[in-house]
Image: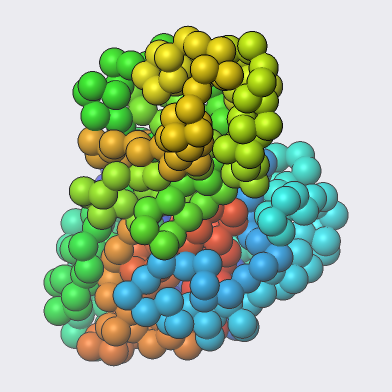
Length: 398
Ligand SMILES: Cc1cc2nc3c(=O)[nH]c(=O)nc-3n(C[C@H](O)[C@H](O)[C@H](O)COP(=O)(O)OP(=O)(O)OC[C@H]3O[C@@H](n4cnc5c(N)ncnc54)[C@H](O)[C@@H]3O)c2cc1C
């Protein structure tokens, strides 16, 4: 009997994309629509796992307010070209053409109405229309280059004129993430900036964790600050520290040493409110219960405010209470790691790439898209939009 060699033969194609995630799928459809033959390789059994879990299953796929100020990078202006050539409205046009319903929530955040799977299916059907081929469960063992790129895998050897690395960052290894893209960049002599988890929850110091772990589940609308950077949103206590939008955002800025300052009552002048009640026999805790969750007030008063009626507080003591509520010092032992982080901060140095095409300046024909680049979006759909925009940019040239 003839030995079956299908899948282990040498196959040549115009473009190989490694990574069938958000940016890889966008790039594949775009390159395929230009008439390029495209092959996508992924080591996972299916495409777009992060798209599916994103936004709690509703995929916060973009944001109406798009601009470089919403991105962290060694050079935030790097995103300007790609996001101006592929805008949130461009993505909405794709959804509308397929009848996928979406909604705009606060701060311009765009979500699917039904399920994030709709987006994955939409991208896959764009790829199908553009005759893109896929190989899943495909482990790449070596990449080399002479005239063509030569990709050795456990499913055979593939060659291509252009190679796109769309393998994402380090966060959530269980969804297929790994350091592949960074190794390829280094292999071609490109610089990779420091990598660390971002948009993640924080751990309290052991002393604070002991005191506050009983508050797990309590959420407080707060402004969390680090120097001049601050974010307003919910702060959610967890068993080991804190999470919630304001904390996730500030985690991308934490410098490993500074103490966070939390305004637990943003927009409220608690000093004036307490001074106005100085003739009252009410306990401080009873007054604070009107503004903050009772469980929090109980723990906070045990630390900062003795159980006395407010009329027994001196103006100095009231000022000190107000300071502790408007600038509560939160000592952080660390941020949670890549298992919990939404994204990776850092990546391939933007100096190494063309901001128009995402092509390597050192290795022509080699492109990088999405999270593997040193571009990290704020919470609110910016990371996925970067994946679409950078994938679209590379797909027009690869
Ligand atoms: C839980 C969670 C929720 C999120 N929610 C949102 C959200 O609501 N809005 C938002 O904007 N962003 C969100 N993000 C971030 C967003 O999902 C990513 O930034 C985005 O998917 C990055 O796209 P990418 O194409 O660069 O990489 P990915 O989408 O991660 O795709 C990378 C692909 O490469 C494959 N791959 C990796 N290594 C290899 C290898 N060695 N060989 C072959 N294939 C490989 C992976 O299997 C994967 O398919 C979320 C992230 C997480 C983890």
